[in-house]
Image (cartoon, rainbow over all chains, first blue to last red; front, side, top):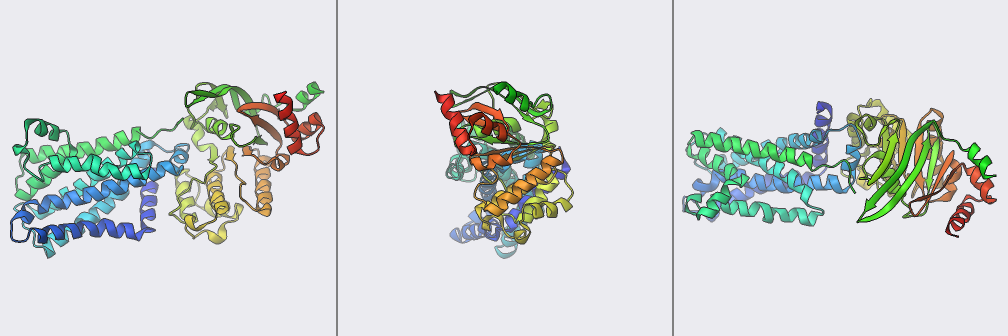
Length: 243
Length: 249
């Protein structure tokens, strides 16, 4: 592990993003637009207050997943990854560098989204608002590390973008956002326990309801665990030698 | 006469790269089968052969990014690709591997940090590859030849003991090509070892030693003068053809 390489990589990834202001704008603005849409699509019902807070995490998770999986795939396909791995660079140095850079974006994303949701859209939660912001950021970080991990299984950008419907959409259906998990069949309930997004959604849902018990703690640990596991597994998919 | 030539070309024992009975399998097929060669220290060795002759595969094995079937590759006394070599071997791939969405200077500063080189080296290598005037442009806006030079500059940052360059002069104008070969000669004069692949035989004349490759087999390992003498051809291209035909018959 080398702090020098990790920090240099984080800075480099942020510099790359800075040269692509449209991507930054999309990362920051799209979740705000979507949450605003939810508010007005469900005007006159309590849906916005029920799922608004969890969506503050789900939308950033989606965009982070997409951006990081493509960013890592590019690193693989342009030869820079192969070159870096011939240099005195640890695999985790690279992935943690990526994680730090995107964590900075995730914090900005969650902060802006919360200002919009709580300020402009008048979202009501029973729990503390900073707790919602904290877990929304954690959701974005989970999306980031899942994206870094699955990029190993894509050869092309066409494949990488399709991991969103293939890998994330089933989890959205299972995580409890669309319908409570308690109403699902036994098989689906058991399946949903294996899905990282179940804990991402569950943690935000609990915080928003003001339920700070052991369940929330368990969900929080699961979110952190999946995030770290995906990063470490992602590092093992980086190969110094290829055929 | 051949005996005399052997005496003229004696890389051992001072070889920085030793490849012994190297075999590489790709797509189920043994594409390299028992290749043995050496790269002498402190000199420029040209790895020459037509497109598809296995130059890149051999280079990848030497820098340790190629999965090999069997055989041994020893670089600067260590197994190829091992950790101690990562700051001593510079590798420039055929396709420029730099970040297109960063400026030239940002690219070099990043790699300088990674290689733990002084940041003052950035300006030095920019001058070496003659890119100072585009240093603050996005790498994606550069021509192919300029991008190749950014990639080359990256490998020069930490002044590695062995530089492995895969077709570094493709698409460069003649003046620049001459300048770069002078840079390579300067590095070799300082005791650095260079392995430079090329499919253009006129670059062979600028090398101290030649490794002639064809169909992933070593046709010959000799000096340019020895190649001329052996084949009786003044022109190195014709000399190579001569050797290739001899090997076929």
